[in-house]
Length: 107
Ligand SMILES: [Ca+2]
Image (cartoon, rainbow, N blue to C red; front, side, top):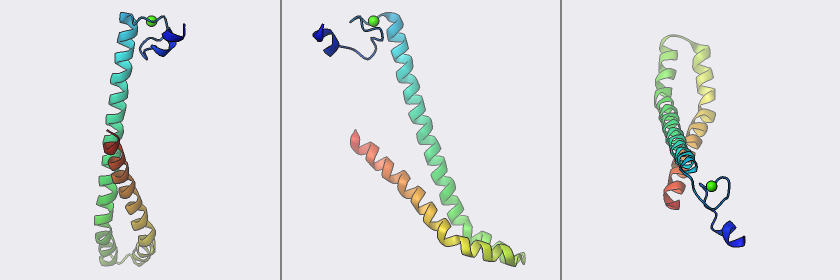
């Protein structure tokens, strides 16, 4: 009985010590789904990081455009937002590369 539990395979969902074809199919589907989710998460993180970086690069142009268009209010708002914004973007980018480094180190 104890041996059975130590030899317990993750695919053996009903715990009878055998992996039936239905259990195997379910297990493979589960792994496939997990990989797809991880892949989608990486894509989402990468897109978010690029979006944040793009915003960072375009930020000065937004300030210039606001000043050219004579939008004094917008210009001063952008100016006072800048420190918070830059720190937030730096945080997002740092978190992204930090998690990338951590996950690649684990393997
Ligand atoms: Ca089973």
